[in-house]
Length: 186
Image (tube, rainbow, N blue to C red):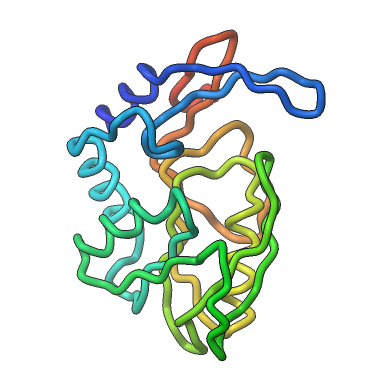
């Protein structure tokens, strides 16, 4: 994960304000879509996910919109397993499941389609921070009777929240004292 780690160390930091509090946030192509994502970093991410996840025993890959889509697509192409995107808008399909997600950055409804009872899925996303998105998607998958074989995120930020299910990550990263810190010391 050397390229991924270095890209995080090189990531620009911006200051954000929420509810009157200022915090620092790294901007990275995996989590934000900017700056440009180098193909070598994405290849490393895909290899990391394939090595950590049980891809031999899955029927579908599930990725939440928006920043899970590029990761899910790349993994889908690598392992030749169909991708299902959890969308931020409804299509009104008969089997559609609505879920509410709340993160440290946003909240809203998302919609799961094309997953049914007995489907064995790999859930992938860009980042684990509060766990709001992953928890909502995981619950929706269980509601329809799918088996979540593995859950993998690229970046784990801050302290890992208690979720009630296992999440594997490729790297831990956060901002401390104006610098990105990567590794077990996060």
